[in-house]
Image (cartoon, rainbow, N blue to C red; front, top):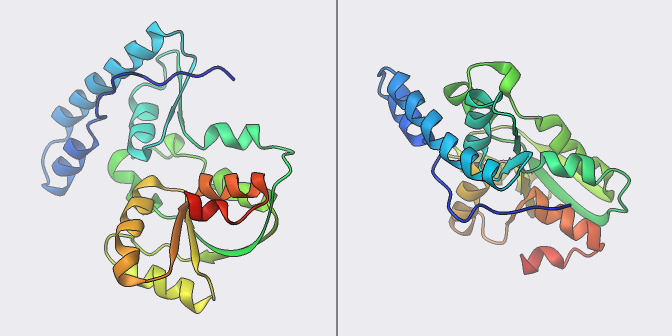
Length: 207
């Protein structure tokens, strides 16, 4: 697989849209800025001969799919590449984790159209490919409003490792875990998949 990282990236402008929606203001100016910001990234990618763009930020992925789905370059979330690449891979990890699939309740703010949603079911199904992994589903409490409920549910389920596939939820929970749930590990989905690829839980402590 041949890949490149853009030397310079522009913010997708999601905070502008969020501010407009929360303030009850017209979203058209924010949406126009978003188109322009994302287009600057796409132009740079096109100059590099890129056919697919993969975003680690869910808001970038959502907005790119919404406003530039017809730009000639496929717009994807980072985990889309793993759903294909890991098919048939020898993945094993003998442990119990809590899976928190957050985010989706805020999607309509950024992408009202359901057909631009991300393939969350496929990202979750990656964990089903890992032999020996016991996955407990954690309800979709909001990571910003009631994060303590997420940690408490994980504890109640006998889980000390929380796995998240939304980078925004991941960031919020990592910051809050030390105070709200001492000893709880919060890991990104790709962290667990790497440990499973190596067949070694210790990888999670190195990331």
